[in-house]
Length: 315
Image (cartoon, rainbow, N blue to C red; front, side, top):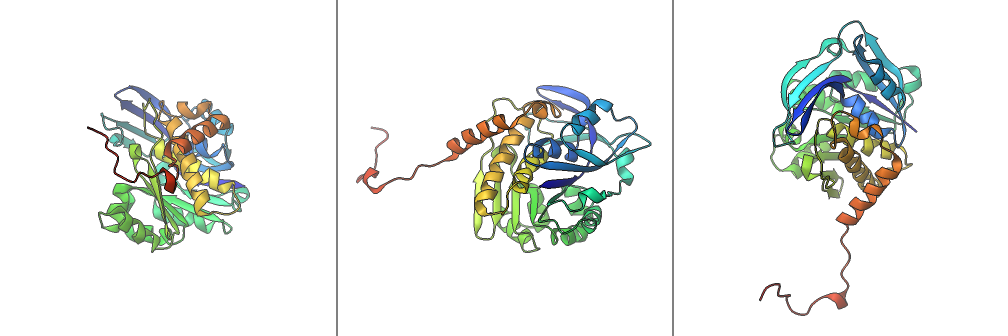
């Protein structure tokens, strides 16, 4: 099994109430790969500048295939932002696209028969270009953002019609569908073609909407949340990485994938950049998966355990 991810590779400078990091490794493709690599082989498509540190190349090489990574003359994509007490909202201070501005994704021949493709939140027309270079993948998923929803809605509709799963946050779903109720927004998106919509809700967790299927999970109760910059992309990595490793995508497997995505993201937010994912291993993921499963399980109530009269909790 193998997964292709197409997206940004960046140097991020982030400040939160718990500290800051400067020129740290970031970007959609990076966080996705760092999460998905525990479940499947990851093939990265992206671009960096000549200033991209060799140590970051080493980090990525130890986790994924970089045949689709190009190094262009110029500076690497940079993002500068900060978070206040609301860690769900990133405030952008500066964005420098640099070599990413003219990025045209090219899939090496060895990537084209990958089973799963994840289209990071790049221009919808570039997402379509990526799909034109693939050989009928079993599972295609995409992420997008409000910028593309505002600027290129028709192109976004076109590419959404060609994918199986859409991952968006609540505000993006509402904006794209033009409705406030999330279930209606998810239905609107699914009617364009995807069989599943995953709604990301930050600290409140995530939910799956499918044909006659609904499932929601809270976020993992991490005691330490320092930087949420890569939470959504690492979540997508865990979610799709798990699905790539199974034979058939069923409602039960989608629920398990949502849990693994949740767990991967819980490690990502515990430190800046990819530090929380750097030494992560499968036993740690499985441990938190079991913790999350136990925390969210509700035991069935048998008829002989029910009270014949209401329970009085207070005198």
